[in-house]
Image (cartoon, rainbow, N blue to C red; front, side, top):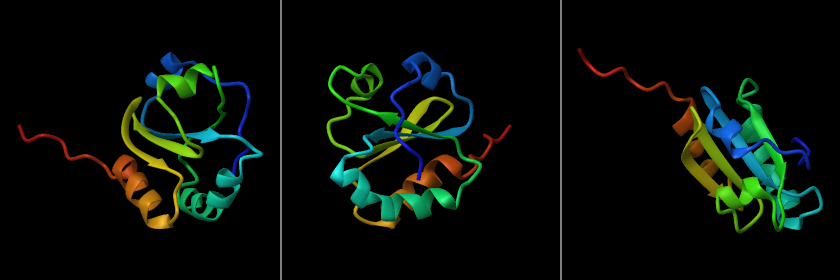
Length: 112
């Protein structure tokens, strides 16, 4: 699993992402974050091509506040900068797999 980094992108940079991506909010010392690793790590390992931004969150951190993050870990699943799914404090892998499918499954083109 990645390490939560203090240097964070701006919300504009997140909104401008192309394709699927995950933003994970937490801290490296958070007990809930460490406990959820056993579910998060194998789920993300199935998608090595997927960009994951590990954001160290906390009071006054603008990116977490812009997503209204209240609990750690919170994973935001995006496609083209738009939130399609959110998992807060995962307690099983299935919730993560469902959220990953939401952003990695190709969308059908509308009929002509």
